[in-house]
Amino acid sequence: MTRFIPTRRRALRACLRLGASIIAGHAAAAVAADAPAADGGLLKVAVYNDLAPFSDKGQGIDADLGAALAARLGVKLALLPFNAGDDLNDDLRNMVWKGHYLGYGPADVMLHVPVDRMLMNANPQVTIFAPYHVETVRLVRSLRSIPVFGGLDDLAGRRIGVEKVSIAAMVMLGEGGGRFRDQVRICDSAVQALARLKAGELDAVLATRSEIESVMRGDPAFALQELAFERLPRAGWAIGMAVRKEQVDLARRLQAALNDLRGSGELQALFAKYGVQVVKP
Image (cartoon, rainbow, N blue to C red; front, side, top):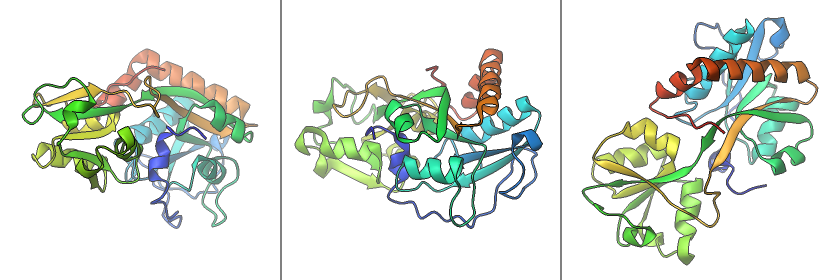
């Protein structure tokens, strides 16, 4: 499995607390997980828990996207938030093609799935398609603490915040044989790290661009930097959707709905609501 898949940052903390109720937001009532599929008037959409700004407590970009897709298909939304499994193969099995053994899932479609060839080959039971955003890892720095930045060497002696069990933590702790290890400050979440940066407790934070944009909201006291790490694709990775392999018609309809949302500007507005600039794959 490729090492840059973003949902792995939730892997080690996942407990699969699958007794949670289905959250149906955006004017959709709560429904049972075994309700009819999309053709029966309901679209069950799986979204990650604890993945702000995309999905957290039933709110976020992916939650809104699920509602917009359901509206385009002319059906009601049933949101199925879930905790990440040990890896993406577990998530696809539990939420797309089989369902969890405790009875939660599967959904009709899962969002925030990396559009990755190795992941596709490892999961022939699903179709991964419809990339809607490109995610990247970025550094945000305090202009007061680090007024000039020419590269990683300028982080020497600086306090760098990362989310625990995250891709940012992995690359920052491992960079240069661990030369920044003593400077890294582990936070419970990227949101917490960014809050500490704004409070002056950190000099910089490494996180995804979406996380940074959603919290910093263009604050002129902080600068966003592109960094190159050997273990990360510089251009980032596309995120899309997954459905069961046999759901060919549903995949076609969802792709058409996404195309409509992008063409109308609704997708861009949906991201902008959370302070994030959508990047077209």
